[in-house]
Structure formats: structure tokens, C-alpha cells
Length: 127
Image 1: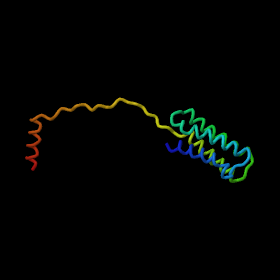
Image 2: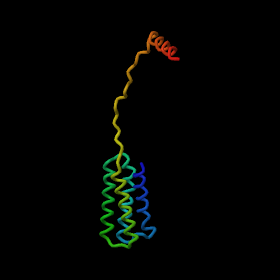
Image 3: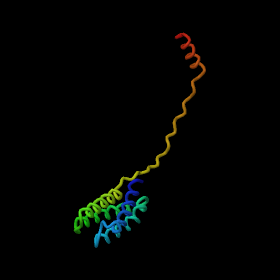
Image 4: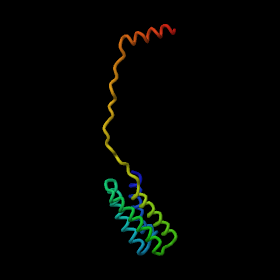
């Protein structure tokens, strides 16, 4: 549950990047578009493997944009970090639940009165 939340918080960060003046121009438009898509896909990733895969593809696309379009070192670090976070949210391991029949223990027979009497007399002899 942690990594889908990481994907959603990364999406919010990408939406706020132009407001914080980290991104400008085409890079800001791409950051907002990826942020909107990631904000939709992150909660859907809880139920759908396709949504998680799409989130990883968005992260890969953002990584390619990061190095293809020129930007300041801060803007490049911003997109690179966000792309890694989206990829992590997209390829996160997911638990597999396998329903197995419950193991029922075998009923054991209670000791007979003779066995208990022998055990008690053995304890008395030992004492």
C-alpha cells in the first residue's frame, strides 16, 4: 500500500511543479499531463495490473523526457526523481493470495484409566 501512495504523491508533485516554477515551457505541460494520468492510475493500481504497468510506462516516458528536453539541473533532478518514483509505484510487488483448505488435526484418543494408573504409580515409585 505504500508504493501506490508514493505514486499518488508524486502525481501531486508533478501537478505542482509549474506552480513552484521548477518546470517551464513544454516540460511543464508534460509534467502536468503525466501528473494527471498518474493521479488517476495510482488508485486504480490497487485493483488492476494494467494500471500499475501503465504507471511504470509513464515513469519511463518521463525519464526519457527528462533527458531529451533541455532544462536546468533542478528541473532535470525533479523529473528524474519523479520518474523513478512512478516506476517504483508501477512495478511494486503485490501479494498473491492462495486459498488453501484448512488443515484439520486428527482426533487423538484420550489415555485409558489403566495407562493413567500405571503413570501415577510410576511417579510414586520414583519419588
